[in-house]
Length: 356
Ligand code: GLY
Image (cartoon, rainbow, N blue to C red; front, side, top):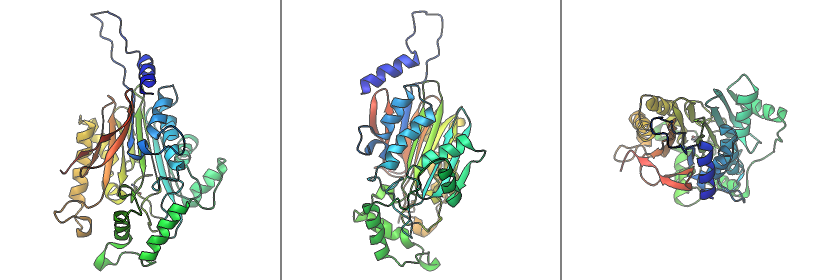
């Protein structure tokens, strides 16, 4: 596949330049799609991953944002990813509530949904908010009614046997009213972390999410983020994913950035916006992402959120690409990988880290 894509994107880019020594022909952008690691992992029973589908569509002439959304739809629909869409880990009441947002660089469109119940593909609804309304963010019942009005079937329950079993185990272990006791803040997330250690949950996905960003051969940039949010969250909790500037930000003249991980830490600094602004000031996506992580680390002062050596004890990753087609994934500590697809085909690459 890599070969086919390579040839096609090469031809579309019109990179071949005739021998005209005195004429400088600007090189076209090398298209690329990046995503969190689950963008390379899940296929929903098909043959393609998120980044492969998005790259294939984008390099076949489809709209850049529509390509990315078609990519994340694979993960949203796959019951095996318990952090996104159908089969995402539910909230404390056992209800799957989904968040998503998207941005279209050239069109300067943005749309998001939060606390959406009953629709497997919140990214599609976020796209419709951007494309069909004057608004940027619809939540809860309103988002669901909008989805219904747009012709989407509303399902009674987006749990799978797996997500329900994980929730029941969590329920068994926690006080049903697990609001934080101010004297020993830790609450339900601590139990979730322990359950991840025991293999009930993917530790990368206690906070869930897929972010996917791409640039096509014309330099058109877009991004989408979609999630079932923090496992066992208080009903109504919204994380960073659907919030423009936090879970995602796109400026076509600069680049795109998005996140996965602890949304609360990202929301405090609106870090996707920060990453794009750092790239605007000339930073490489890697350095821009590390700058955002430094900001988050500096803002993390509560003991319950710190390791013994004073570092954030939670996961937070940023994925960024710039208008030149350069890209990076970043995280606090080694181990995380992110998905990439370009003319060399799909693969996982290591995230750059703030701490060794
Ligand atoms: N980053 C996903 C969330 O915190 O909801």
